[in-house]
Image (cartoon, rainbow, N blue to C red; front, top):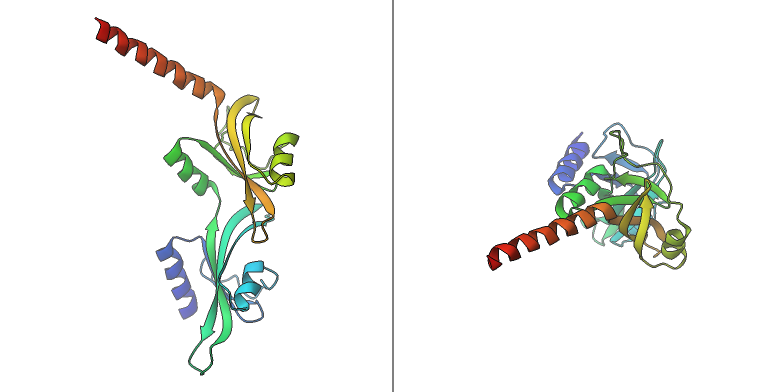
Length: 216
């Protein structure tokens, strides 16, 4: 109970989505987000075994979910016992953020751009809403070969026009990389071409109106 309460408090104080403590074998001792979910192993997680080796690490990971894959940024640090004389790693703590709906909505609120997070080629979170519904454009796969080849094969960002829901978007696709510098997903930002042209039209009209007033 004490461990759960401390983890839960630290998680909310730091604004992270999860916080996990593991022992030297990678077994989960407690989760700050769910006190009933423990005992499973994270020994295969790259950030966990690196932390158990005494390193502080950060990684971006893709995990398969029941309905959708999830993308998260995970950081891990060793837990070191210094009271027994020589410092000794006795476990590790893992915390981080989910790149979920709240994440993409926050970016759109700041930038005004639509945002989509891809787990590999699958949309796992997006601000784009399917017309005529309240459903977001998630669970679908990017099929544009040029975009996929640029991001995953050439390891570059794609900047150009993309067709989304039959609408052209001025867009940018950036690789999401893991600790091994391998692209595990994509980060899309963009705006529909119609809204950009509409904004340009409004700007031209406003400029014309101001110029006319000044001339008069």
